[in-house]
Length: 214
Image 1 (cartoon, rainbow, N blue to C red):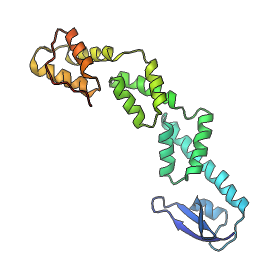
Image 2 (image 1 turned 180 degrees about the horizontal axis):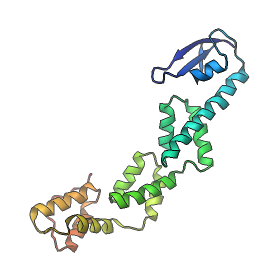
Image 3 (image 1 turned 90 degrees about the vertical axis):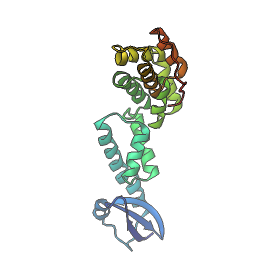
Image 4 (image 1 turned 135 degrees about the vertical axis):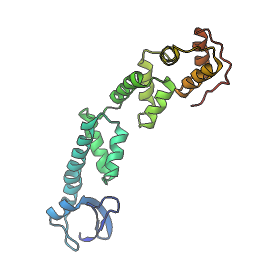
């Protein structure tokens, strides 16, 4: 087998795509390419190719992922996207993901639990909106449902707390304030039924058009 050509990545200037016998074989950093004494028209063995794919690239991708995770907890999808953006191929990324999941560095359920807890403190919202946020970060739907199913606060509790916090000093029977309160809860993902029931607890009869979509 012969290295017939190499191409520098447009997105990752330090990465080279290596073609063996006219076909793409692997991507490698320029530093590793030179340290392994590879060059065009040189012969390369199957063992060397496997070493590059399974050891050189894998170890570098794993180290990159660990550094990325050391900054804060991430979802599997976030790590996958990061490694892809760094120029690693799909097979290498999958191997790294599986190893990091096996040793607990990647844990979607733990991420979802922390996300829900943090959001409940910083920016409370409905379970529906929380689920959409988790799904957008690559959390599987069954994991999101499990975590939110364990969450002890109901939407009505959260909405009631938000009304007290945001509008406690205002007259909720004032039409402008009433509309603001309604729209505020709607934009936090609460459905019309929950909003109306909560406002009635404050002796306010909602007369705002229902808003069920955020």
